[in-house]
Length: 104
Image (cartoon, rainbow, N blue to C red; front, top):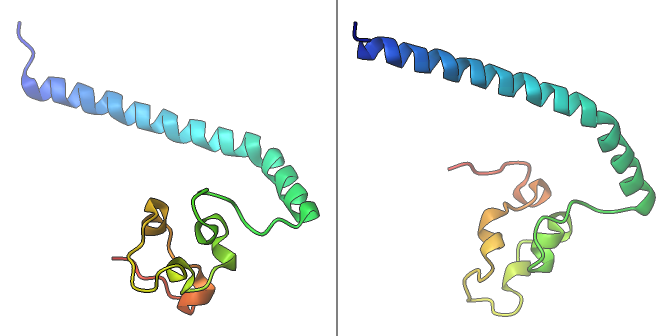
């Protein structure tokens, strides 16, 4: 007896659905378990008066986005293009765009 291709596909789809469900439940459990650690780090950041999260180490406007202005990337050379890769990944902070961030 041969197994039809649609039966194999449905079995694969069922396995992937179960796997996705397990991943979602696991994510919920991990978020709940990490809540106290996140709260502790938020208190530490407040005590140390840290401004924001440092995601990139290349330039000051990518290290501290909340402290940057619109002309900061072009201070060295006003006509130059962005030369740090992280500058193309990081959007300007909301206070510079008037609360509106373009999403293309």
